[in-house]
Length: 102
Image (cartoon, rainbow, N blue to C red; front, side, top):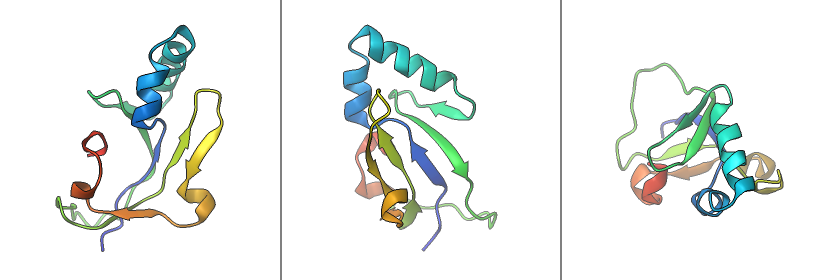
């Protein structure tokens, strides 16, 4: 199993969609997008790489199991899910998650 890049998902799809519908949400998204190291995908999903995986040069394929830490928060900072708090990363293959994450 490859140890995929440890990533913190700053926004879940549902939060990104609902957050962008009012002034507070738009301000939150703009602030997050401006943070150092944040990458914004065309879909609007933002993430920040905290620790890169090993430097073996291997890349995960569409069906390769990967490990990923994440934390999801609401725009008020309330955390609604965290693999860090559970002490175990999420394991999945890229073809096993919703398209916005891949």
